[in-house]
Length: 283
Ligand code: NAP
Image 1 (tube, helix red, strand yellow):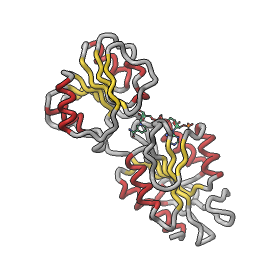
Image 2 (cartoon, protein in one colour; image 1 turned 90 degrees about the vertical axis):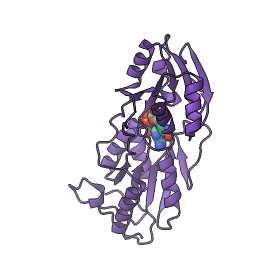
Image 3 (cartoon, protein in one colour; image 1 turned 120 degrees about the vertical axis):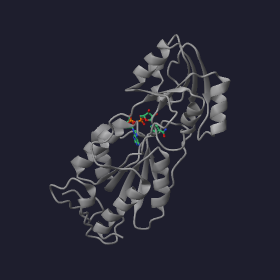
Image 4 (cartoon, protein in one colour; image 1 turned 180 degrees about the horizontal axis):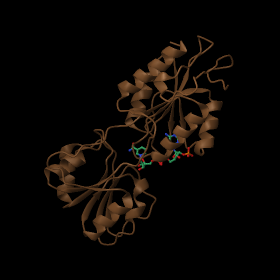
């Protein structure tokens, strides 16, 4: 049995249990502080780190992919950069004696979520997966939903559209071949990918006010907004602005991110973690 809490600590998990709240983590040393890894890079990840770092009964480490050079660092210890796939993640969890993992990554970050499900299953560690609720289509929304970025690119190019593209710089590649459509591209940092032939680039970090989003869409005579269904308030105003100006939104559906059970709020994450800690007797 692997040890996770320290030299004398043992993590035990009954065979055949699949949901984390049924898990029992037993620490032989009552003074050990369980180490919790938050996979972050999101507002929720930072909020969880801020909340949990205040706990005296936990050591909380945030992990960031490190894509944005000007990182807004969460509170507490952090590590930055990929783990090197599932095997690297497994090694990290074991070497760092991680006792539980919280997946608070972005809804479109499907690779890391798949990796952590496999890694936690291999190491028999509890995983609490947060799935931020998506935006719902409301009255007045004109959404054209597509399965991926390639289909979104094809759609707007065929329409010869004036497009507001605010999907993150990692996903711009499929749009680079569009020669008919014109793009207003908004990103936090200058993209390194090839950009479409007709475009204007603005570098800004959200959150964005509704008035500013309305003005942007009007000033550039935008007729399509291409968006991920990220959920949450930070980038929602572009969707509200499109609704109020009767502009169509090409909404890219979410990838399949979790096979495991998920929770939707930070409160649920904390409650699940508390239950695990209670079972360790480490509180
Ligand atoms: P991904 O495609 O799921 O991950 C790709 C690789 O990046 C992973 O396999 C892992 O590398 C590394 N990685 C990702 N998250 C990590 C973390 N928290 N700590 C350590 N390593 C991490 O995810 P992504 O490339 O980050 O993003 C995919 C999509 O999600 C993009 O559309 C992106 O724009 C969006 N996203 C948005 C936000 C936001 O806040 N707006 C934040 C993140 C992502 P190894 O395999 O080497 O471990």
